[in-house]
Length: 510
Image 1 (tube, rainbow, N blue to C red):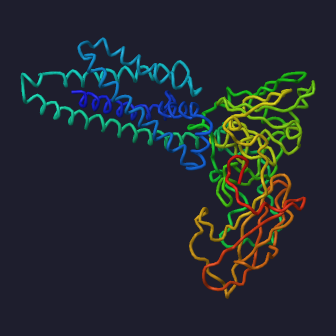
Image 2: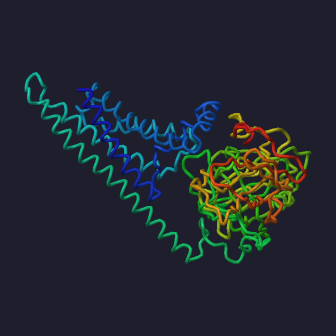
C-alpha cells in the first residue's frame, strides 16, 4: 500500500511542479524548487561547495537544480506514504493540514535561501498547495477502497486507477511546462513592446546616454585563426552566480543606498543614477574559477557612474578601510578603499550599449578593474564604507580575499573550450595562430610562443582597447604537418613573467 501511496504523492507533486512553473512565468509565484536548490547551496559547507565547483565547474549549479527537483518529488512521495499511514484520506478537512505542512517546508527553504516572496506570491503558493492536497487526498481515498482481503480484484483495480490518474497528472505536469514556455516567449514579446515605449528594462538600448561602440584601435591588426571576438556581445558574456535564479528587480522600485562611514548618507533611484554624468569604458571581466583558455571571461564597453563620484557626494570620513558592496540577493563582498576611489571603478548600468541583462546584474552592478568577477557585485543595492575588514561570500568558502587577476594568456587557435578543436589547416605552409593575454589592471607588455621544444619567440601584439582590457596577439607560424605542442606565456606591464607552473582556479585563480 505504501508504494502506491508514495507513487500518488510523487504524481501529485509532479503536476504541482508543472503548474508552478507556468505560474512563475507569470511572475505571480516563484518556482519553488529553485528556492530549495538555493537553500541547499547556502547550507552546504564552504569546502564542499568549493570541491563541487572544482570538480564540476558550471555543472555544479545544474546538479544542484536537478537534485532540488528530485528532492521535491521524493518529498511529495514521502508525504503521500505518511499520509496514507495516518489515514489522512478519511476526511477532506485534512487537505488543509497537508497544504500547511507543504507550505511550511517550502517557506522554511525560502527563509534559509533568503528568497521568501511577497504576500501575494506566498498566497498563490498556498492556493497551489491546497489544490495539491485535494488531488493527493482524492488519490489516497480511491487507493484505500475495497481492502484486498475482501476483494482480491482490488489490487488490480488500484493499479489501473493509478495508471489512469497518473497519466492525467503527468499530462498536467507536461502541459504546465509547455504553457510556461509559451508564457516565457510572451514575456519576450512584452519586452519588445517595452523597448518601443522606452521603458527602463534589461537589455534596452541606452539611447542618448549610450557610449560609443567598442573602440576601434589598431585597425590594421589581423586576428589569428579561431581567435575569439575582441568585443563580447552582451548575450555571450559569461554568467556565474551564487544564485540559481537571477532576481527580477523592478527599476521603478529599486534604490541604491550609500552609507557607513560617510558624512551624508545617500539613496539613489534608478532614474537618478541614470541622470548622473555617465562614463563609458572598455574593460575585461573574468571569473576566478575560469580555467586558462576557458570561456568565463569577456570584454566590452561598460556604461555607468564612477564609484568615486558617489563616494565624493556622501563624503568619506573617519579613516575607512574598505567598501562593502551588497546585492539585493544578500550576497556581499568588499574592495579596498583605493580600488573604490580608482576612477575606472564604475557602478555600471549598461554593457555593450544596452542596459544590463538581468543575469548580468540589472539594474546596476560594480565593475572594478584588476579584480576577479566575485568582487564585481551584481544586482547592487547597497554601498557601505567600513572601518574594519569584511569577509565576503566566496571568501567564507575558501576563495582568495584579494582576488587580484593573475597574468594569463591563451591560444585560441585549436582551443577545444572554444569549439576550435578540429585540425588547423595551413595557408601555403603558414598558420596564423591567435589568442589573448590579460593581467587585469597591470596590462600586458609582451607575449611569447614556443612550438614543441623550440625556443620562445615574440608574438605580434594588438594595441589594447584600453589599459584594462585583454590584449590580442598573433603569431605567423611556418607549420609542418602533424601534431604539435604550442605553449604561450606573457609578461604584465611591469615585465613580470606569467608563472610557468599551472595551478587550479581555487583559491586565487588559475
